[in-house]
Length: 382
Image (cartoon, rainbow, N blue to C red):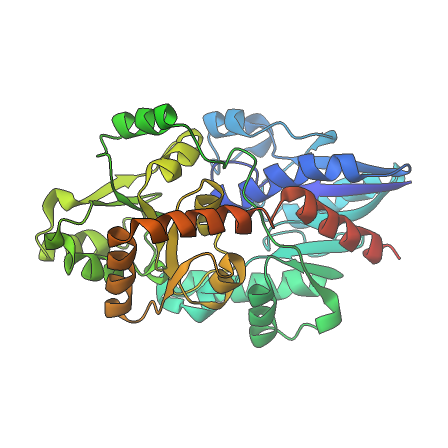
């Protein structure tokens, strides 16, 4: 009997990206299991069990219910006590048939007592140190090093992420597999009425350019705004910047103000995840000027919703989009400007890019991700 333990303590709103990974992976894994295999979900502790303030009760309530047997963890990933309390729990589960532990996060117990798979996403704190405080950068290097040593196998989310991993950590190539991400099944073209409902909810015009993501420095939003400022007077649709906002990085809003762009640049802030597919579908085009991504899930989600995409020509994004997106050098404001203008002015190219994007998004699925992950499990157990 092979009982796989998937640590789902990150499937909460505090971890929007990793949480979506876990929430999509678990349901896709379950149907692929054969006789003698089972999945056990290590879920986040209840507020009373945590004894800390790392996550509010409403966040706990919004954690998705995942398939498989569930076991409540005694501590969160941020609690130092996980270093002995999670291994103690895994030891008890091992007596019941637990064969493998899968951590989707580098802050994890570093002596699990079980064969361990680690999912690895990116090296943003090392490639773009200005995006994180010094202490956080040093902590990332230490914690990631410990996690990579603890892991018997590593699942990178793209070939680019795998290559970056080798550039910054001494990990044997034979230890690392690639298990790409995918857009969830809810990301599909929405009807005109659904798109109109989202436009009305967020007070958006019939045409707009969309960026969806956080405002950290590596996302390169000031360059996007500089580029947009050069075409705004040519009756370009408004630029809508949506997603979580980190107040440590006010530069995008400052740049928009310095260009006196007014309401032609809209900062929506966080968007209800249930509205995201319709928001993508409502956009005239999706633009993603990021300097670096481990994968670039928003680009794939936009393509899956039938939205034409223009994005950076950085490694993981070219890997994800193939020939479907109109690419630009994110370091060259003129290239960003020209790509925006080209898609705005050429309706036939927008239609072609949208069609190519839908086809490209079809190459990725959580079923394929789960199959690749399950292969890692089975290889790890010999």
